[in-house]
Image (cartoon, rainbow, N blue to C red; front, side, top):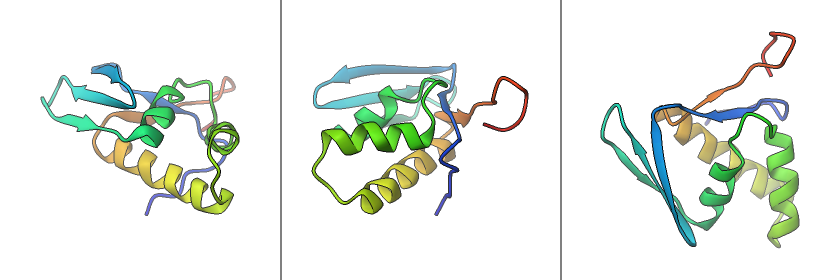
Length: 101
């Protein structure tokens, strides 16, 4: 299981096309041709993979939207981000000072 820091800033890879089809989102890796479909929670996480939101901020915002246990939500966010990372759909952004975010 991936362990992202709450300070990490996930960023969408540049060569990804995506289409929101509420309540889900379909992602296409243009390099590999691989399609990836999200559920509603995954769509909300993907929307926040903008290089501005930290993992902690993503968890905080989603905790306000969903009536779930915060620890379970944080684990689900970490797991989903891990899958996106493994599939080459995101990378972890850098902080402005050049250090890992």
